[in-house]
Structure formats: structure tokens, C-alpha cells
Image (cartoon, rainbow, N blue to C red; front, side, top):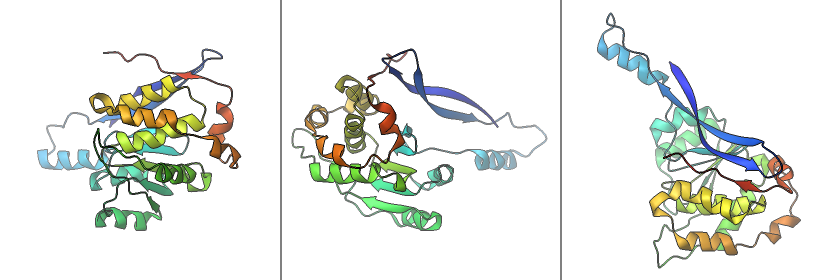
Amino acid sequence: MKSEHKSLCAVTHGDGDFCKTIHVIQTFSPPIKPSLPAAAANSDSDDELLNPPLNFAMVDNGIYRSGFPDPTNFPFLQTLGLRSIIYLCPEPYPAANVEFLKSNGIQLFQFGIEGTKEPFVNIPEDAIREALTVVLDIRNHPLLIHCKRGKHRTGCVVGCLRKVQRWCLTSVFDEYQRFAAAKARVSDQRFMELFDVSAFKHLPITCSFLKSCEGRTHSFPSEDK
């Protein structure tokens, strides 16, 4: 099986040309050899493929985000060595997912945020703050943050994390829009803009990436169409 790396997004620091690039791996199978039965060849190919969840991406060292993982994504998640999953939906976690967590010693943190739509949107600030407290505790890493599609609820948590990391709002909104795309909500961005991170300044800095972010600005290059 061959693989090629493609950058999802890049973060450029204002103090130089250093560029931090997040990669995703695209895998593809070699052509089926004529001597092999088609069914057997397809079976071998399926065993080699690792399928990430919808909208999967690396947020920072030990922190990932995605949409709702299903059983086809479990082999991929095993490669991450997760300690924790932050689940942002109010619905009960499916039995298959619970069994996966138990089998792999992964703890579940659930913050039931309703997936309402504009204009009737009420983002519970307390739940976002509690989720961020879990994210900022390195003892919970590696961890995955997910909601249903990895766009709005996950986007708000990650956006508020970026404010703790001292990102400028332009970069925070740019990242949010990359995942939300045409479904981007003004209310989500307004929430992130007004979110007060001062309370987190008094917490012990247990995430190494917070230390490295101080005094830097972040921006994203425009995407190639």
C-alpha cells in the first residue's frame, strides 16, 4: 500500500518563515494482480485501509477533532493511542462505541450541547468551559473532540481553545470556516469572539503547546481552489 501526504492547513508565525503544517494521509491500494481472485484481493485491500472519521484533523500535539466516529473508523482511532474522548452531543453514546472505549481503556467525557440551528441558538458557555478544562489537562491526552459532524460544536470548542492559545480572531474564524464551510454560523463566531478566556490564565499550564504560543500570531494561507 502506498501513501502520500497532503497538507490540510498551515500555521505561519509572524516572527519568521516557520510554517507548521498539519498533514492528512491519503492511502490507496495497488492494482489487483490478475493471478489473485478478485474477492481475496479486495479483502486484503480492505484490511490495509485505515479510515479516519468525518472531518478528522489534528488540532495540536495530542489533540484531535472529528465528526462522529463509526465502527469503520475504530482501527484508525486505535493508531492514535487515545486516552480520552470528548463527546459534545446530548444523545447516549452508541453501544458499539462504548465497547470500543472499554476495550481500549479510553475515558469518555460527555458535554450534552444541543445541535440547534440559527436563529434560535443557545451555546452553553459552562459546558464549553468544562470541555476546555478537560482539553487543557495533559493527563487526558491524547484526546479526540467530536460532535456529530465536527463542524459547529467541535468548532466552538476548538475556537475557544485557540483564544486560550492567543490566536488572533481572524485565524480563529478562518479555521472554523474551513470545517463548517457553507454551514458556518455567525452565532458561533460571535460566541467565540465574546468568549472570556481570562479564567484560564490562572490555571496551571499543563499543555506544552500553550507555552510555545506566547507572543506569536497565527495566520492561514488562502486555499488553492
